[in-house]
Figure 1 (cartoon, rainbow, N blue to C red):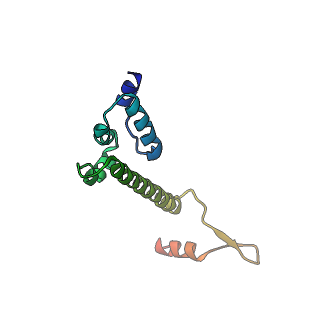
Figure 2 (figure 1 turned 90 degrees about the vertical axis):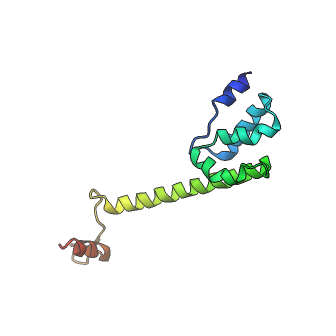
Figure 3 (figure 1 turned 120 degrees about the vertical axis):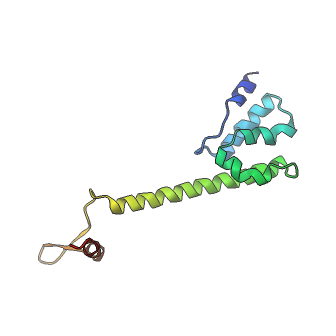
Length: 128
């Protein structure tokens, strides 16, 4: 019954990799002797709320467990890709707006600093 207890505490976290999570679920469900017809429902219970919501069309009786897990895998992959892209955009945005970053300077032939076109435009936008 150890597998049953572990299965009861198994829930997917947003950053979990679905293939590993699914493998652990399948191992525990098998050891806990969960009937095959309950796998889809039991797996769905353990998904994140967002994944459950997006996977709703595939939880119906007309979809097999394999179809359901394939769809869930695509949903998780898409959510992770979107999260990475949002993080990348936020990093780019914050680095542009960070007052602690020194603007790029170009040194001219006389040795004095000269601002580049982007810096010049930024200063013009600020009215300086």
